[in-house]
Image 1 (tube, one colour):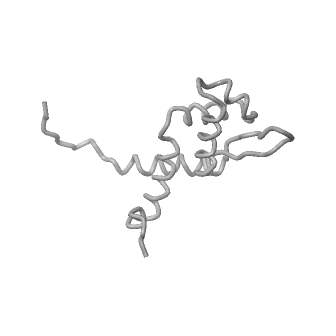
Image 2 (tube, rainbow, N blue to C red):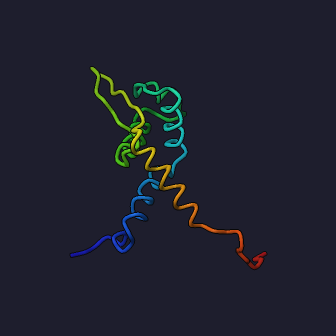
Length: 113
């Protein structure tokens, strides 16, 4: 049986990596910000906000949904998207926790110029 290399790391780092992967494109960051500002919208509204086609926006929404950061609810022919508050809180905690482990106060680096 072949194991994914990610399983060699603790679950906290795996969860952080999945969130960071979902955040790894400016369009997804823009979508999250837009949903935060509007509280809820339909897919077409999001497409109007981005310089991308509807199919591409839907692919980015799928990545955000896969990470659990966004929820989608079908309403007729449209899907209403909103932030998942529980996952956003988890993301904030993970980011704070991870960044706090990156101590740089006493860091000594050689110049590489």
